[in-house]
Length: 217
Image 1 (cartoon, helix red, strand yellow):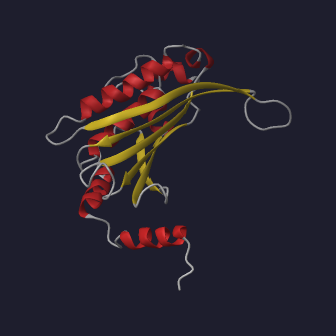
Image 2 (image 1 turned 90 degrees about the vertical axis):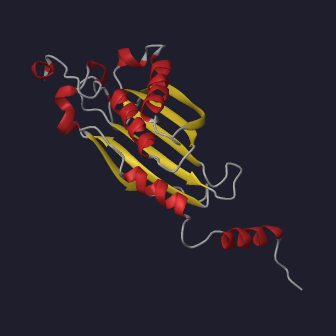
Image 3 (image 1 turned 120 degrees about the vertical axis):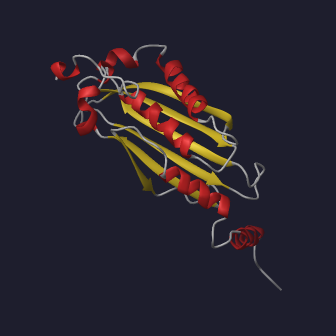
């Protein structure tokens, strides 16, 4: 007579249901993420994805190379020494409600701001528009699109007290979003996400030169 608990049985069944080789749709999606077109000054690397959110997952990290783009930064990031980074996670469950043809993307961005910008009540709305405009602009090919977009944008002020490292005050913007891709080509999604990161970090639109930027520095 077996003494396995229902939880153990469910865990074993879940483990058996995930093939060793990822499905072709997931492999194609991962390959397209690494081949996305990125503007100068934005770097992309593979990072460790979460292990328990879906049977298959992949993640990339994006950062601003300030040594490359320092002279292009717009004033709202202060002296240009602040951090700006993003994480884009791909989750795929072939047996899920979304079906084998859909991929779920989870995005996170954090960027340092200056006091004047983070205090603008319109900042969260503008940042969200950067995301929707980016997705609409980059996902224009046949069979490429998104749905079920949702998320939050938060601007924060942190004040340090006592014996703790870091600046006395820090100002940041955080974006958390998720959406479903309607195809396996995710290159446009990564490109759109990278443009949002660039905008949040204070870079002008691609191809636009900020007059007087070198003189300011």
